[in-house]
Structure formats: C-alpha cells, structure tokens
Length: 229
Image (cartoon, rainbow, N blue to C red; front, side, top):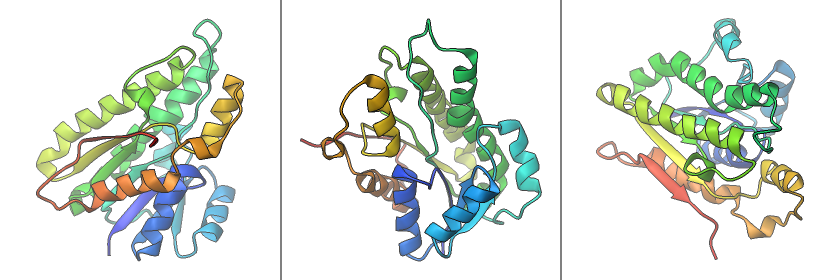
C-alpha cells in the first residue's frame, strides 16, 4: 500500500487528489493548518490520517510536526495548498508578499525538507501543483507569480539534488480550474464566475495520479494542463 501526504485537501485540486487516493485504497495523510481544520478533514475523508501544521508559518512546522507522529515512510508528497492575492506592485504591502511567499513557496520548501528522510526511504515522489503563473506573469499577479516561479525553481533544484536518492519530482502547471480560489480570483478581477468555463479539479487530479503511477523507469518532470475547448 502506498503512503501519501497531501496539502490543500480542503478544496479544489487537493481535495480531488485526496479523494482519488483514498478511494483506491492507499494510505492517506492530510496536512491541516490547525487542529480544528484537521478534525474537519478527518470527517470529510474517513480513514485518512491528519497532521496539523501551518504552511503560513514555515519556521514553526518543525516544532509542530515534532509533537506529532508523521508517517515513517512516504511514497509521495503532493503540494496542493496555495493562496492568491491580486494587486499592482505599487499597491501590494509587505504583509501580502510575506503571506503569499510563505504559503506558496517557503512552507512547501520546509515541509519537503522535513519529509525528505521518509521520501528517500521509499524512493518517493514530490508533486508540486504549480500554476500557469509559474511560467509567465501578468499585470496584478506579481506576488502570486513570483511565488510560483520560485516553486518551479524549488522543484528543479530538488529534482537535481535527489535524483541519486531515487526521489522523483514533478511540477504540474494547471490553467484556470473551477475551484474556490478561482472564484476568489474572479471577484478580485471584477468578473463574473462561471465554473463551466474552466477545468474540473478531477481532470487535474488525473494528471497528478498519472505522474505518480508512472513506472519507475521514467519521470514526468513538467506537465502543463489547460482548459479544453
């Protein structure tokens, strides 16, 4: 039985990935930002185990996980959590920059560091659910795009460093997906939100599982997914 740790399972792509892994009988661990959220996730995903740790406070993750019992081995670590706050560079405050970089980049880097021994033991797989903004930046997307460009660099460096340990690293770049985050983006853009226009989170989850299930003689490094016609 494979063992997976997923972040961002409360909604969207993370929830779709978690559900699929649980339905096929794998051992599932979910990271929640606090104990209350962990209880909610445990109720939503019966059979899953939870860990409490706030990606928005990366410097406290080691302490938080040190007071719990993470899995002894991991076949995959799927980074699906994220936040977005649009705004022009001239208007964004340091608070927005710090929050965005912490949740989207520094938190994933620290969680990966803490889980590397378990991933090395299993010759596991790290999947970074990135964004099209990790490839190019548009007006008012500077903070989010910077965090996602950084996540791409993190994945590339990690892949080069851990190849000899048998750890695979995949970055998935979804286009606009019908998630609560996308609904928030539309509100910030002042646009009407129509979920039918965008990809279903299940479609992105399929790409994540495709990367995870690839035979050991190959590795998907980067995967771009866009809404169909």
